[in-house]
Length: 179
Image (cartoon, rainbow, N blue to C red):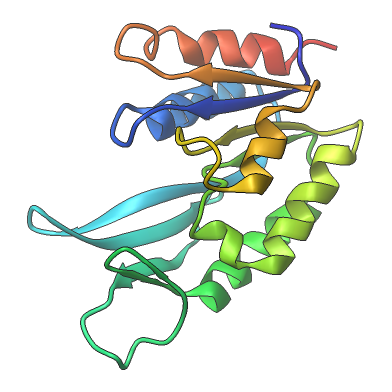
């Protein structure tokens, strides 16, 4: 591994967010500053009813909820309605925090409904003083912007599997701390 940015991919539920959270714990233990966000499932019992965005500082906001009626306004992804304004209110300030490591879980279809988010991601990937650890969908050719990231020379794409997910956090931190 010798790239500046690390993109984790893999099927839903394989543990991408868990790998990133563990990497963040290791960074915190080493007193390395980082900023960013995680995407978390929201459940009602066993039923998934949506997704929240949680910053690395613990602030939380809605990303998407099940579209139970036409009262919910916003773009749709499957059975979910994306709350773009709630997402932007929490996530956009993360890009302005003074940190050399940025955590973006995830750069996917729901998040890319936000044009300001897309612009901030493009900007941060062009800065030489910032390293990005992000998750991206496994499916190729569905999101052209994600495919562009996947094909950048300064990005390494790692597929998270059941076999490698326990060792990845330490390898990722080691890569992020290389100069």
